[in-house]
Image (cartoon, rainbow, N blue to C red):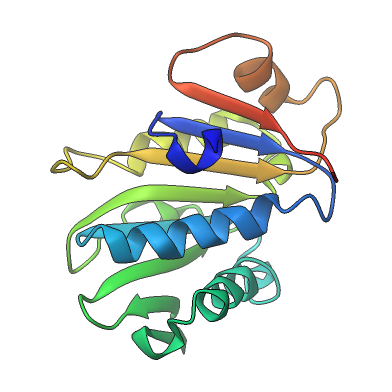
Length: 181
């Protein structure tokens, strides 16, 4: 419930495999993209080639679970999902080519949401900061809002994610740990 209704700037979710963090995120994005015309999503992983079998598959599964497959189109080159009624996009990028992440724009609406899957793979906080400074950017029209969601498996105690999002309370951060129950 906290995850679903959160409008804070950051949602950060760690949990083990099969804890439904990625499935829940994918369902949230498909539902909310259809609910909010003008919203668009950037999905980031460390390596671009890993999207097909992870985030793309999760988002396609969410489309199927919601029974809205006829409203979505998938293209492979470039890798993206398009909400057919409005032209809204889900774009996929990898941190393996930073320049392709920095200057992204969308043809319709605002690039207001970012999902960083397997955020633990981003080894340096400075690399995340570069992404965070460039996307989402600018003003967005209400009821839209800017939000970055980070999902990942549990970390090494020394990883920057722990210090930044879990050790220091911040009113703009929802930090959650999922379990298998």
